[in-house]
Length: 477
Image 1: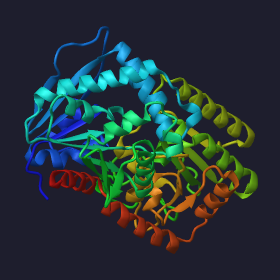
Image 2: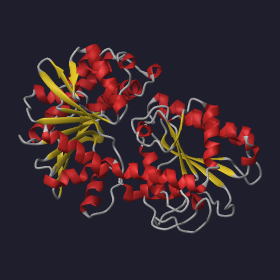
Image 3: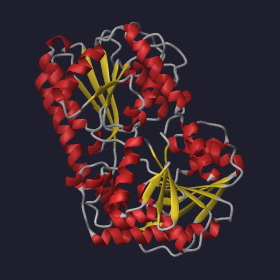
Image 4: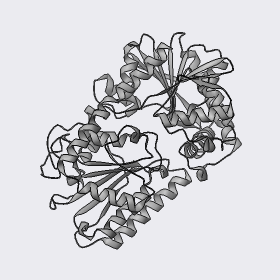
């Protein structure tokens, strides 16, 4: 169903204006969410609203800044330093993030940060409301803005509002740790449509709603106090064409000098051309404790302990992009990862061979596409993840001749549809080490068969399909 209403996308952060300018020139966007919703926004015009990323010394009272890029508008508001500290770094990142990812020991409960979170949601609503027209469709993104729909309703908005949760929804026993779980769930039911990545998360949400509110669910609709909210599963995806290889280059069976994307390869990045027989294991993550990078390092260490034949013939490359560097838990995670890398390299390195290459930096999608294509195995082993698009990017980047193998955590949302990956439990160090070793030895025909099936899933659940299905469902309600 084509959109016949203007689409308003609201997120904590908006993409940089450069990404809108690039898309206006028909160039590839650097942001996955931008790619996912751009087509829907351009059908009938669209506005993207959120925090500018700028911090002011005092609370800002002026209205949002609006810029126009063809049929798209970009509206931003600043936050004060106190709001960033309490709403974003505090309640969003130290309370909701660990809670929703089922890390109760990391959850920081502070009434002050919750009240700031509510105030910022209210300010988002009051700043957005003057920009709205009666027939607009509003699509709110993620846990930073649980209460935005509630605040808009309080201010008189009667139009359609949808919400999508990009992270997991935890079991009720964990979500109910939150002292404000009742109010948060009531706020969610102010949305006309609430979307999640898979059935498990939706069942967890319904359990919490039943326990806290005592409503009723029938046919994917939840009824409470005379109103109803549609609940739906919408697995987010990628644009496969962004990562699809254009030429054959280095693979498990051959070596070339082009990565098919006009960018560097891992071979070039790490000066590995003199050792063409090396097998490469790749990990690509934000540096976040939910990603399980320390477990992954211990898994690799166990492989080197158990299979001495891998020494001098295998390298593990871990790319970790900096994330939330002001949050104490992330500082501790970085220190732990760096310590483990040093210990393992110190234990196993030999002249001319260092088993782990650790790259603490971010790379463009075009570079990652080439890196994925070079890897024999990609370890996507989060301890908990809403979806994990790295798994889908890796599959899309593989060539038909000699594809690499995806080793995927059962605790990633992607595992619910990507069943032809090698599914592992990253808490099981021995079991995952064995599974990864077998992935390195997997016969060519099996690798091809698995990759064909995985690629069909990636293409079916693309970013465009995700945005079109959600917005069509919201419009049709």
